Image (spheres, rainbow, N blue to C red):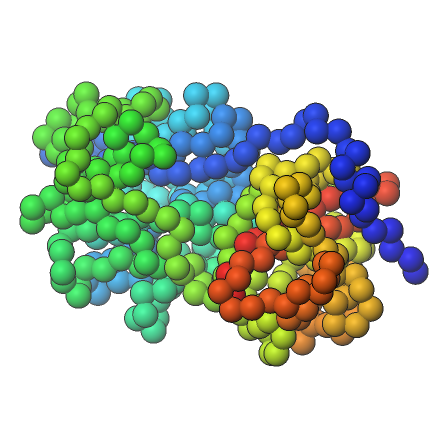
Length: 406
């Protein structure tokens, strides 16, 4: 069987019209505790207007006392869309302005209008969980169980930790410098407010500004003017600022920073998802996996010297490896160790056809890079990866990209 390959010429001739808007999600404001019954709690997320939130999950991991590591709350945003103003509010729909998602939903259930966010040290997560089966794990068998049984402060979350991405996490801390109050997955910490759990945290003037680390939302006036669910946060002068990020855990084996994530949907209605782990024997040590692909279709991995995000439209997807400014990309479809050709099985997992994966699926990335000059992957370097695959009716598509520092 012959496999049609991408040519640089055809890519450069592809029209630039229709580039997908960069997609981004971030926590912007969290109000977790206030005077009286906690009915005004909310979590505000900012992101690209119109972004489909299918596969986005908000989780909370307990960080206090005997509950450390327990998956405390799970909210599945599948089926929702980022509003046109770019603010998505999860709150008590009866008392929180501009609520898009009722916090009373989820496996914790039964709490009604209050205490849907527990008081006390907790790490909040934005997750991208493409596989509905993994979401089902979070909302059923894994809910209210420890995801950190070995106590290393790195959580697992799903039964298949390679199948999801931690977009962002942040910890609200109730007691400082206490081993009984901890953040998980290297989350940045905000608090305490003196000797108390903060009423709420916010980014002055919205993301991309850092969190305020010494000014809190008002505990005594729920619904007060400093709480702005669904609208811009007020500016504030903060002597302490806290920059968050994707942390370091969420399975503790995943490596790399995603880009062009999520990719445009393939013919299954979901985006093809690329992940990496440092588990390959020999070679570079990097093992790549691709799932949620269209069953029976073929594909292979790509590598590049730089990223282009949102990328160049090619057929049904986007090439997100740069082809300008002296940058180049190569294809792992060369005979021998540089061949990664595989076929998606019925479950959407790319099965390796050419014996270059020790686990049968995905690809064990070698040291040699298939671009001009055959450079070698060296310690300290960052390389960028993506998967190209065939689609129905002769079209093609791509996975998200992954930048990996070796």
